[in-house]
Amino acid sequence: MTPSFRRIALIGKLGTAEIASSLTELAAFLKTRGCSALIEKETAAELGQRGLDYAALGEQADLAVVVGGDGTMLAAARNLVRHGVPLVGVNQGRVGFMTDIGHRDMQSGVGAILDGKYTMEERSLLDADIVRGGQSILRTIALNEAVIGKGSQGRLIEFDLLLDGEFVYTLRADGMIVGTPTGSTAYALSAQGPILHPAVPALALVPLAPHTLSARPVSVSDAATIEIALKHALDARAHFDGLALADMQTGDRLILKRSADTVRFVHPPGYRYFATLREKLGWSEVRAKSD
Image (cartoon, rainbow, N blue to C red; front, side, top):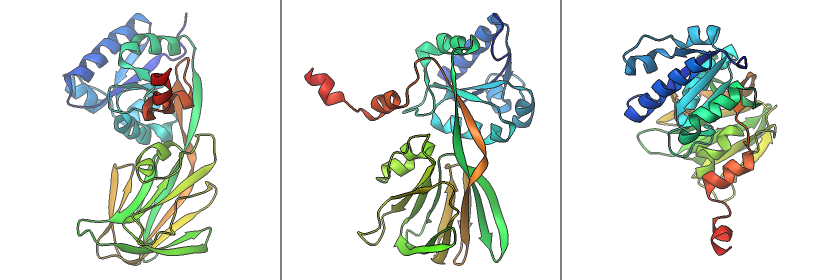
């Protein structure tokens, strides 16, 4: 049978012998299936090989298999999204909301996908722009979340929140998380934000330790333009998926819009979103024990 994907990019978390072994095993397995393995440059260096940078992978790969956890998947997705390369993850991290295939099921899960037994899902992400004095100082993307927060001095920041140019409120807080549906089970969840199903066209606005009890998490349309304008900040920073960082000053504005690009995740047979939540969040554990 001709594989559904023939040129497979392999990307792994660096520095662990277990993942290096899995990547070597996976490359050998792909060869038996008539596929070519294209190893990401830094991943290949860990294996003592020469690899390809993300630009080359984006041009050549039909599918990217990411071995690691959600952080490794985030980095790969951010680098490949503009190229439209779909991704699937083998979980060798901690929780693994975005890595569907268990380590023990690696060959069977990837093999099923090569046989055409998979579903494809598109996930939205954010285009982010930090504006200072009318000039953009940073443009980036966020698959999980954009966060503006206090820096190393630990002092509250004060900012205005606007939606489509309409003033919402002024808030003094540790910061604000703007989470996508994908990111609603990440940092936003730990800050008591709502879980958003990936099919819901919404964003979660989650204040971080607000200096008022009335500031609650709010879900808004992902068609809205979100603006966070710093009114007072001796030390503030913006983070995007924990991978991009920018220092911010009083008067800076963080502008967020839904990106025209989407990340495409490939899911193996049997994938169910709520089954993933039950497993990762421990839902139904009490009932299962009582039964």
